Length: 116
Image 1 (tube, one colour):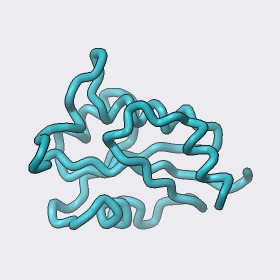
Image 2: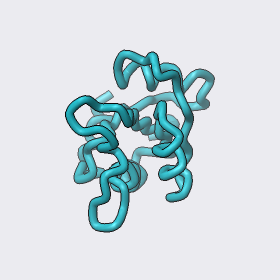
Image 3: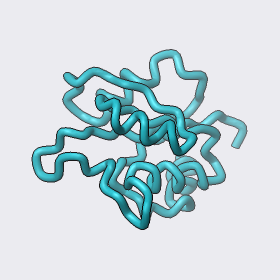
């Protein structure tokens, strides 16, 4: 695929059921980092961006070597957060990978991209 694919991972700290879930440690790393690593491992993905409204999540992402952007706390959904984060992004395809999918198979992401 010659198109530039950007995987965007929306992540919100203030969940009502599990506050701080993106930063919950799993095997020594925050959940959001595991998800980003899996997205980066997809053969079709050229870049990964974490879109969050919380500086702690941004910092964890950046400390692990991922790009992250702070978005408005008023975003009503992950899709809204992604739309805000990608404004002007140089890419052809956007893949929304949920932040609480630390075990997503990179091949699943590839299959979704190839189906487009």
